[in-house]
Image (cartoon, rainbow, N blue to C red; front, side, top):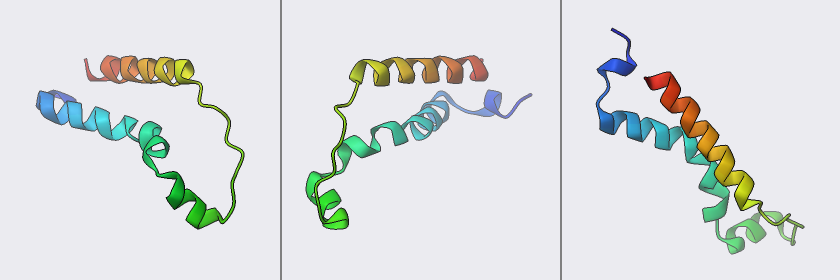
Length: 68
């Protein structure tokens, strides 16, 4: 029996969240915190949300494939 088969659905869900949460971390950092660290404005490209969504879907599909 593999380790993944011994995990509950909640544990698998939390593991999946842990693996994907870094994708959203930058979106949750307030601009003021960033400016206090860098002391000036940085040019930041507009996020490509379509790419991020597609990337996360691919990541989730791969995770699901590994856990089945």
